[in-house]
Amino acid sequence: MYLRYLEELDGSGQHTASSDALATLCGTTPAQVRKDLSFFGSFGKRGLGYPVHELTVRLREILGLGQAWQVVIVGAGKIGSALAEYRGFRQRGFQVVGVYDKNPDKIGRPWGDAAVRDITELDHDIATQRVDIAVLAIPADDAQEIVDRVVQAGVRAILNFAPTQVHVPAHVAVKTVNMAMELEGLSFALTNRAD
Amino acid sequence: MYLRYLEELDGSGQHTASSDALATLCGTTPAQVRKDLSFFGSFGKRGLGYPVHELTVRLREILGLGQAWQVVIVGAGKIGSALAEYRGFRQRGFQVVGVYDKNPDKIGRPWGDAAVRDITELDHDIATQRVDIAVLAIPADDAQEIVDRVVQAGVRAILNFAPTQVHVPAHVAVKTVNMAMELEGLSFALTNRAD
DNA sequence: CTAGGTTTGTGAAGAATTTCACAAGCGCCC
DNA sequence: GGGCGCTTGTGAAATTCTTCACAAACCTAG
Image 1: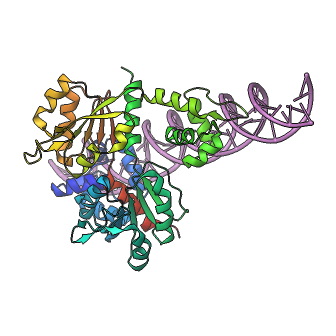
Image 2: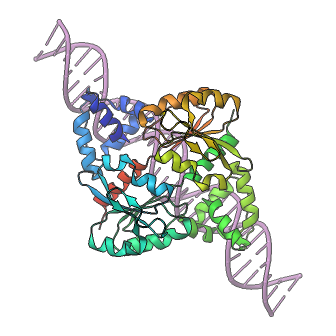
């Protein structure tokens, strides 16, 4: 989050930013900003604030954004397709190297200058080319099976859009995005808001 | 999260579930399950566990899922369209009552048995029909402006897919889903994993 | 070079969350 | 009906996270 706003500041020519300024942008507190950043090192100058450009560079390093991570998307439905064409990914160095589906109607459908591939080829493909991250845009019922397969094939990070918890070995990182659950959180807020 | 798995258990005919069973399903601990549920009341029976069906009903009440919340989607790009047709929403009682865009090419494009509407009509539409939740699938630069407008028009809850923090008055609930940020979290995990 | 106005970095305090651990309650079986 | 094996609900302890508050450091101006 800090990186996002620092990039913005950098683009607009700001040279330094105080924890106070960053906090306002990010919707947090100055103390929080300082504690968070201090976890990784001592970047600021007292009396001045943080050097915007230098800090963006350091944060990118810390986040491992120096390299182009290779991503496969599993599931070529609405969400999968939207993700496959989402600019934000490539912009930030995530390269979509393959889209997979199990539905014969979708397999072979053009995608970029390649085509949607058969999900049965997934294991083989991951074994032969480097794949860092698997994005799952598939029904909940299929999620765990696909997770097991990509983990078996060597993938170490998974972004899961299926509305279910998936279980993985400790060395695999998973982030789950559950839109229905977010909406239900809003429903709760609407129902229980203190007016 | 508990609701999701309780529904599954209910569907498969389970009558009771222990905190231990729920914890395993949800990837948490039994103590956590009990503390969480106890916040809303005392639902379980000692020696037996929680009554699955009864608890789903109660959780739905608590989350305010009894009624059909009316949702508008702002932004008819890839992500907005995917969301507009996402079954998970309707299944859980969220009714998409309108899709808006500012791009003339997209305005009027058929969507369900209606059409994508001009974003300039948004304020008027919200004022004349009930809209509970606004889902934002628009560029970061437009996000705050649209947030201000829908809040002004009376919307109390926002699901934000724009990759930016948005600021709202205290009585408005916001959930932000930032896919690029999730990917960066995975990048960090891949970079700093302890092997 | 010094004084004054800022802002960081960080221990310590405070708050919130999670885990522990166990009494109390429940159903089942004999 | 009583004993036994489970499981909840919950205070208390432990841990984690956030906020406070201030010394140390830095810049600018004169």
